[in-house]
Amino acid sequence: MTAPISVHDLEAAFSVGAPDRAREWLACARRQVARDRGELQMLFPVAARACGRAPLPLSDGWSTDDAARVLVLAAMAWPDLDELRGLYDHGDADEKRAVLLALDFIEIGDGGLAIVEDALRTNDTRLITASLGRHGASRLTPAAYRQAVLKCVFCGIPLAAVSGLDDRADAELAQMLEDFVRERSVAGRAVPDDVRSILARFP
Image 1: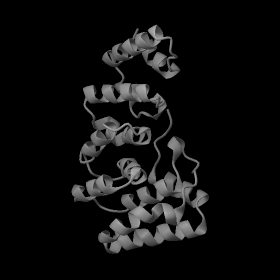
Image 2: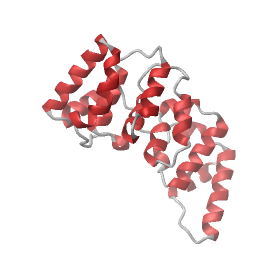
Image 3: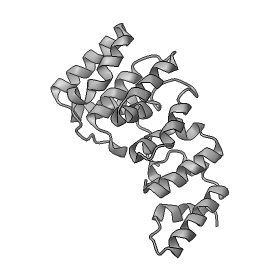
C-alpha cells in the first residue's frame, strides 16, 4: 500500500517541480493569509496563473497549482467551515478539486463530508477521485462508500485511487461488483482487473 502523502511531501515536490516565481508566490501567499485570511478569496483563484500547472512527482496526478492551493489551505486554521464550503461552491473545477484534496491535510473533523458528498454526485472523474482520499473514504457510511466505489467502476476510475479499500471492502460490495461484472459480460464488454481482485477476496 502506498504511504499517504504528507504536507512535507507536498512541499518537497513543489520545491522541485515549481519555478522560482511559483515558490516565491507560495511563500508570500502563506504569509498573507496568516496576517489576513480574507486574502484567501483573492489568492486561491489565481494560484494556477501564479504557479502554473506542471505535473509533480506524486501519485494521483498532482500539479503545481493543486499543491500551491492545498499548502495555503493547510497553513490555516479552519474554525469556520462555511468559508471552506464557499471556496468549493464558488470555485471552478480545479479549485473544487483542490478543496477536496486539502481535506486530507486540514483539521476539520467530519466537517468536510458534505463537500465529499457533493463531489460524488457529479460526473467529473477528477472530483470523484479527489473526494475519495483519506478524509472522505473514512467518513462515508458503509452504504455510501460502496456506492462511491461502484460509481468509480462505472466511470472508469482505477480503484487504486480509492482510499481505504483494503479495510472497507466487504461481501456486500463484492456482490454489487459481481452484478456489475455479470452485466458487462452479458453485454460483451471488458471488466476492469481491479474489480476481479475484490471479488477474489469474497468468493
